[in-house]
Amino acid sequence: MKGSVIITAGGIGKRMGTDLPKQFLEIQGKPILLHCLEKFHSFDSSLEIILTLPSEWISYWNDLVVAFQCEIPHRISTGGLERFHSIQLALSHCTGDFIMVHDGVRPLVSHETIQRCIEGLHHSDSVIPVLAVKDSLRFVTKDGSEIVNRNDYKLVHTPQCFNAEVLKNAYQTSYQEAMTDDASVVGFNGIEPHLVDSNEENIKITTISDLAFASALLQFS
Image 1 (cartoon, one colour):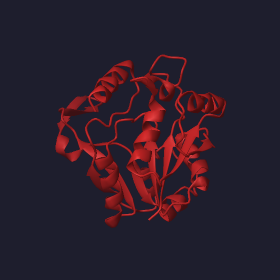
Image 2 (image 1 turned 135 degrees about the vertical axis):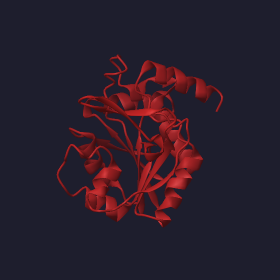
Image 3 (image 1 turned 180 degrees about the horizontal axis):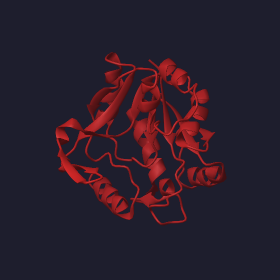
Image 4 (image 1 turned 90 degrees about the horizontal axis):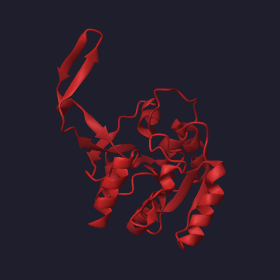
């Protein structure tokens, strides 16, 4: 089967506290987004890669491609108002039988996690990688808080993987606030996601401490 991957990179880095969007910050001498691009290309060089970028940062990315001599084939799709709209626009560029959607600030996803996501399509048209919750959890109420069973919860990662037709059909709708990720969009059509294991290093880089942690992990990967 032919596969497509949409790498979403529309963030502007508010929580990072920098003028440069976090996907362009460097770890181990290379932009985070480029690490993501290389990870999927090294997994399968035949993957069709689409990057969603804010229109005002496309020329900056093109300069980075030249500066870092990146020769990985990819297509740019202009980002929309919300992540939902960015994916909606990017889907028009996808020709694969299945489509993965990955956060452009998760450079440490493993090949094994990507493989598990694709294999999960044998069980459902929607697949998401997850991690177990290690810490204790409490549910905050108006009167205080209540303990909850952490085994009832999972942390959701990317790439999320879908039958292409199912994902494209799901995005032929209007945005709702409850659509926090692609699986939730598909879920509005009644499709239950199949859960597979993610790798623990597959963190989303949103803060300075995340940046330092990812840099340390990459040094030994």
